[in-house]
Length: 206
Image (cartoon, rainbow, N blue to C red; front, side, top):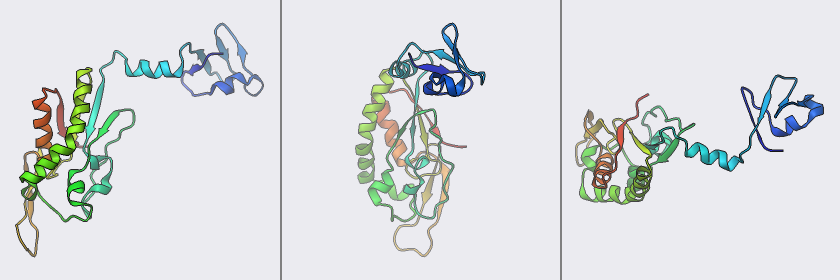
């Protein structure tokens, strides 16, 4: 017997096949159960069904998401956790957290002023290149690329970033939020634009 899809309510194939427990009877191509659940015959295998879903005629898109929008444990300690991105039902690529990889999880508060330097930019380009390869391949297959940044982040902000922070030994650390992208976002834009990859990009705001 072929696998079956269930409309409205879920019922396993084994439940429908168990005619004693469900009191089912076979009709014309259907199995009718007393609970008013109709299981239609599915002529395709589950693998074919998954492939059909991926290759459907509907627009395909993938979300390229800032790391801490899925894993807030990478953020600077003590920073208020922003709303998390819900990946359910979406195709998602989670970017690495360049700050956590470059400075570790014990890093102090920092702004774009401390990150806007040649070594950090070189590091951002290095960690993003493998992701850029994948994103380019997906774009060439007609997949829509949507990049979600982290608002106010000195690395991953898109429209808003943080600046300031006096250099050297200070008693208090001051910063402010201004319009503009973070360092990692700038390097992402440059890399994808150099490859002529079409993409949309914005801060994740819920």
